[in-house]
Image 1 (cartoon, rainbow, N blue to C red):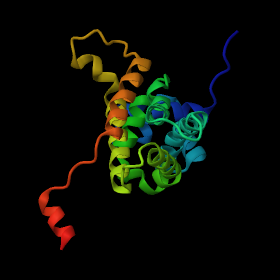
Image 2 (cartoon, one colour; image 1 turned 45 degrees about the vertical axis):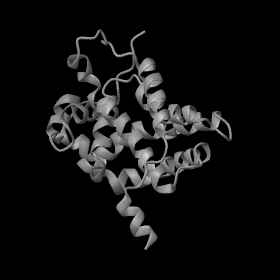
Image 3 (tube, rainbow, N blue to C red; image 1 turned 60 degrees about the vertical axis):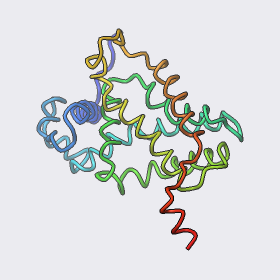
Image 4 (cartoon, helix red, strand yellow; image 1 turned 180 degrees about the vertical axis):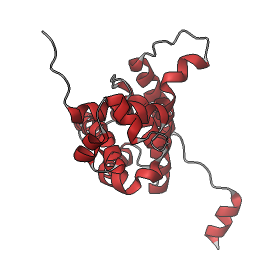
Length: 214
């Protein structure tokens, strides 16, 4: 049975997702996207009005279901999830998603946070960050709010690096890692991140301690 042809809007989103992930947001023009999608510029203007709106639509199409999966995994772990369960819920939905072009796209989004701070991060990611911060606070109560802030961002940084580098990782080693085993990467990252979340608090340098005493 022949699959139904994709609608114009979906073709535009698919083309934009591919080119944004491959070339970057600034470097990809609307004409590049229309050529890839085999549509005219009027179709892009009709469905999205501006390039900024198209970028948002491309990002949210992927982030919304991925963040929903994160929350579902955290809920499934119960009221007191372990550090490993927290790390897995945060990492696995994004690392394991096996849809062409998604990994490099999400990597570019997380590598350019200032560009999307108001339009995407505050709307879509702030609730996720708060939820995971609360979970980490319960799992590792010795951490201060400031320490949790940094460790959560270190975890996000490790994930972002993996997503941004996904397609070139096999070129960076002689090890037989092509194709990259997504499940194995998640298991390794969970252990790595969990150790970091549990690590003892960093001792303050003597100069800072002296300032606190005065």
